[in-house]
Image (tube, rainbow, N blue to C red):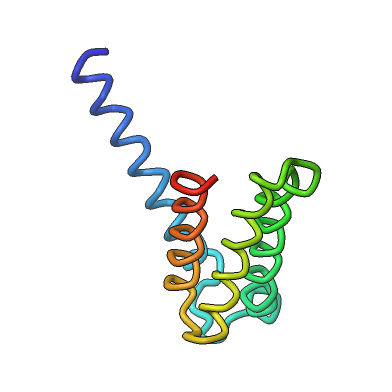
Length: 108
């Protein structure tokens, strides 16, 4: 791939990304209030996405050997515990991921 093609790809991706970022402002025009539907999606989508991620991550663990589902269960427990204790999404996800990876790589 030559440099011109690479530059064209980067510029195209940058233009599409910028267009997607600015599109809501153009669609909403000069409104100061956020539409009710957008506010509703902002409230419910994070929970729906987290639920889908949990189902996706644990879908194969239930039927597998304990060496598969025990680390997954421990990672989920650490994530939930940290979130209830600290209330920080980043700390919860990081802690649960570290717990899971340590168990998978070093214990099981």
